[in-house]
Amino acid sequence: MICLEARRLVDPFVDNELGPAASADLQAHLASCTTCRQLLADRDSLGRLVRHLPYYPASDQLRAKIVRISTRPRFNRRLLAWAAVLALAVSLGGSVEVARFARTRRVVETTASVADEVIGDHIRALRDAHLFDVRSSDQHTVKPWFLGKLDFSPPVEDLSSIGFPLLGGRLDHVAGQPVAALVYQRRLHPINMFIWPAGDPTAASDSRSIRGFQVRHWIRHGMSFWAVSDLNDAEFGEFVRALQR
Amino acid sequence: MPRQTFEEVVLPHLDAAFNYARWLTRSDADAEDVVQDAYVRALRFFSSLRSDDARSWLLTIVRNTWYGRFSQARGANQTTIYDDMTHDRPDHGLDPEALVMQQQAIEKVQRAVQELPADFREVIVLRELEELSYREIAAVAGIPIGTVMSRLARARERLLAILEPSVARTGKRS
Picture 1 (tube, rainbow over the protein chains, first blue to last red):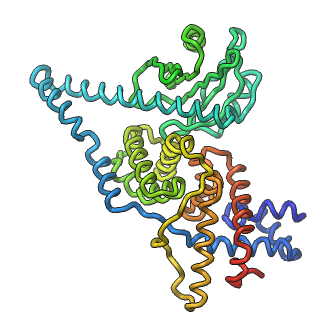
Picture 2 (cartoon, each protein chain N blue to C red):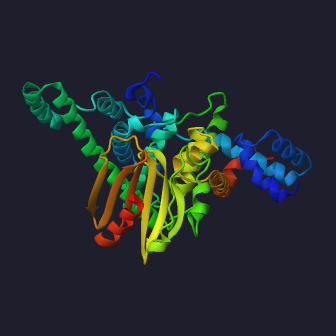
Picture 3 (tube, chains in turn blue, orange):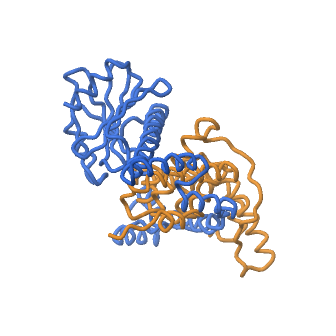
């Protein structure tokens, strides 16, 4: 093993992320190389110091707030008003109505929240110039790329024939879960297509415009689709219809 | 599978969430805001938590919340004041002189970590303080494992460059 190689292995070695074979190779090299031994010693010294960095625990005040959020999620002051409406609904229509009412509320909130998040992801990807991890000319290079990276296989369609070339794909996160992000383009307008298994309590379909961005959502074959772009309404509609066909 | 409640699954990771947010934001008040927001989001999406690793899941939400709220407005590379050292955990087995030297070195390393760019700072915090695996860090930060490895290496090299004299002073070099 040469030093250049050893240098790359030192970090995974101190982090216990190196397999036994590679560890043995590295140790053999260290036995005969003082420079790399010094490198490891420096890492160890640094590690000892860094592990003494302050660990900031949550304050009691914050903990109390979070416990309130966690244990009584649906009973803040604003909701008392809703409770009154619900009580009325009970007297009028019975418990089925109540359940439907509560569910509707939750769906409205969740849908809005996901819409905000996918726009945030869209903006971030553009700002960081990190639109895709895998570049593509067609769907056959993008789809397999997701294998092993996600616990589902996103449908990947090639729409270049109607003027929406697929640029690539990347992993992104929505609501803390990994999702597939496909990137299409019309002229200079990128379109982010977020896909994950349906399961969130969102509406079955949604369409909104926030801060100049268009968001379209639909569920199909058990997958939740969220498309975001700054493209105009007509062309964005064309894109969405093509995928829904 | 018996479904556990949000309280049972997510609440125990509050300290981890706050510590991570505190290191990202470098401010108690901002960290509290981020954590509160993150918990509201987490609660909303709890039904869609698919993995059994609630901590990584929560930290991912904390990161996304922070990223959405702060990285644009403040600039991820901004350096700010770091305040009290009240949460330190020095080794008590050392003699007084060594303790002082270690304390100085720790303060220096804390300053150095605070001044790292956010991308580097977070891998150090997730690895050294949360003791997450590379795979978990990759999931939280939304980057490939190879990037986790290279960022850790570069972050450590930067810290060592800054710390060289104090590392030497602790008598542990060579």
